[in-house]
Amino acid sequence: HESAASSAASFQARIEQQIADFGRGVPDTHYLLASVFLPGGHQIIATWFGHQEPDMLIVEGTDERGRQVRLLVSSGQLHIVLAPVKRMADRPVQEIKFQPRTP
Image (cartoon, rainbow, N blue to C red; front, side, top):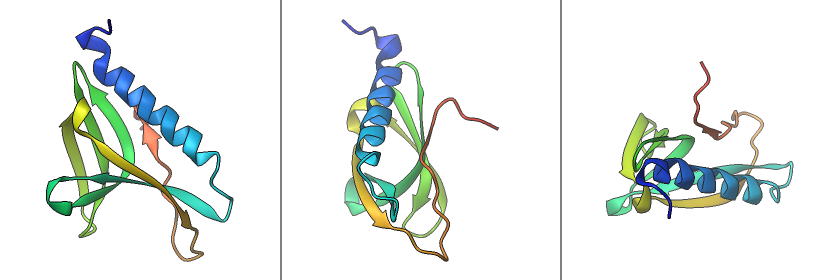
């Protein structure tokens, strides 16, 4: 059995692996977008995933209003949709990052 102390880290590692696996199939003309869906139909465009033991996941990104946000959620309550999005010359692409955070 997985210990409670490793559950958030393990869940985050599985998210990271799924994003990497899906990203390998995205053509160079596109980038990978990770949308985290919240109750009420709201969403966050995720740019960073981390965790706090024993079971809290942390997601940072941008909400629908363009605000920088941080979501704290139990590891079993996260819904993520991955999608390839066409690159736009006038819009920088934000890479999805994972814990540990680099300064």
